[in-house]
Length: 103
Image (cartoon, rainbow, N blue to C red; front, side, top):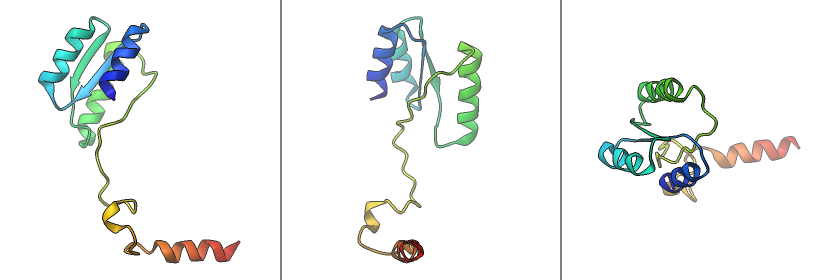
């Protein structure tokens, strides 16, 4: 998804920074995309890496107009995890009942 969007944005004159942990693939992609493309190796799961990445984007382009966040990182504490479907491990039923009784 990210590569497809990067290609489309480049074809429409945008400057694009591609971010991934896969350095070789990322560098190959931006080499193909041309001078309006830039690559940063970054572990999106690491806050400090994210901060460095945003700083580098700002230093490179002087702006940030859009962000596609599609790293596929799963929040394992989320109530939306499918392993918990049908269970009430997180008290969702009680919360729902409490909200609906207040109406």
